[in-house]
Length: 251
Image (cartoon, rainbow, N blue to C red):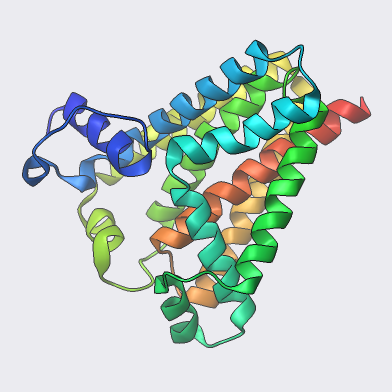
């Protein structure tokens, strides 16, 4: 599978950004994960353009767009995983019960509550500095996907079947690892140059968030699933933004 087709497939699978049509019989989904950070780059670029284009508007208006835009561009695929995971964790069922909840297409009360809390938190954070910190915040969309890629490499599949299991079993682990590390290094380096102390705080927050996710995934689910990967991405974006904004405002 050539890189152009793989990149097109990655955007088709992990975003709602219009892509050229291609014969899906020829698409190997195991090769698309390498290019997942590029989807984060596209979301981040849109975030920056929105923040700067409407910089003179009310900060709450700018922040609202910043919350909505990533969901529109991804189709909410990762937020869906976040909500399903919140429902599963709140159920207090055994491992099999939690995994069955992840497959349920319906939304529960706990998912609704946690989803609203997440959106309100992001709205508040963005309203404090989405314009001034647009670039480093945007890099969080890249870094969060790198965190999920590293978790896919580190954790076994919780179900042992399905699309994600197919992807994990056949993916080029060296290429996925190299992609995750390169994009992580670039994201952190750019942020460190522009905002050293907020960058350090944000990096520490994401590291703690990812390590906590690894423990949670193993303890509660016995591994990772597509929904859990979405949960990991959303959590990393929240803690990256929290670390940046809080530290920057306190300086």
